[in-house]
Image 1 (cartoon, rainbow, N blue to C red):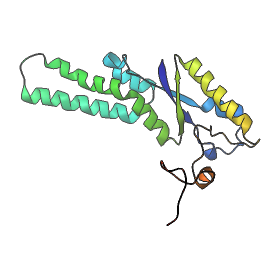
Image 2: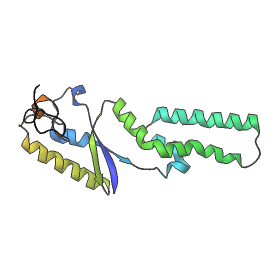
Image 3: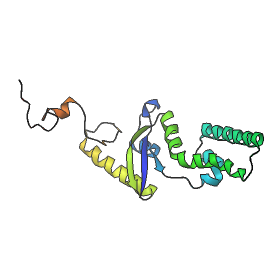
Length: 169
């Protein structure tokens, strides 16, 4: 089973009134995983996901490693040092994608556990639609992922802790 982080687009930037279908098409699922393809093809993976700043950082890091190898002239198999940036990309690709989405104005809605992308989408939208049926018929796209927090949620039992009732002294 894989974990997928769900991101919602910021509809406030759009001029047109958002529709449910348009909103659902723009929801993004990012899988939390180690990127095996980045071990050998890190620049291509960064280009595929349009992570331009990460690609620039990758190129700079490869240049620094090349200059350090040329200046120090170490003995042994130093060509493996060029795989260190690839390993870094493989480990942090999901984080880089989430950071890009946040920078572009997407909001994180939560996480879904599913074996593949189609199942993750189905689970998320089924849960969202079940929560939407309980809400009033307004155009609110935020999924109810947790219980409400605040004074209204504490009204029935205002005492926190292990004591059953409040006693004034």
